[in-house]
Image (tube, rainbow, N blue to C red; front, side, top):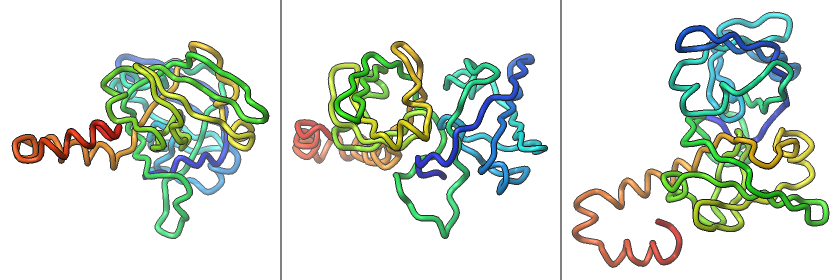
Length: 215
């Protein structure tokens, strides 16, 4: 479990693609210093397990499923990545609950600098959009952000200077891909409300929630 509060930008030291999977190396300072083999690390929002750790380089195995459902396979040597170690019981929850299991990949449609902030519009599939609500949380490349606007097939977030400086989001350009994970609590609520029993007995509740933008 993670919070979406990025602790460091690491750098891809190498990626080796073999068969259905790959091996990914990340050069890190802060995160690697406190990490150990077997630890879970969020890399651009994807939960990966350290298989080797030496001289500040964390090595990860990438499964075919990870390559299929995220943009991790597009990384190249030298690329910057967002890093966050797994949440500890004593840690503060500064963002929102993030599992590291990607729901889909989006693409940046528009960027607009307003004062010292950046509005970023991201397009994605309807399957992902149905779980996104205005003022709700979403993890974009592992960054916990708040949705400020919704449109058909897209949503908008605002990037503050601190987030721009310590994460990769400010370096992204138009058409660049981003990993998306919707709020897990919203998915649980949606699943509960769409059980057969709820569909039969609470049509009025579903209608109200739908009109309010929660479904």
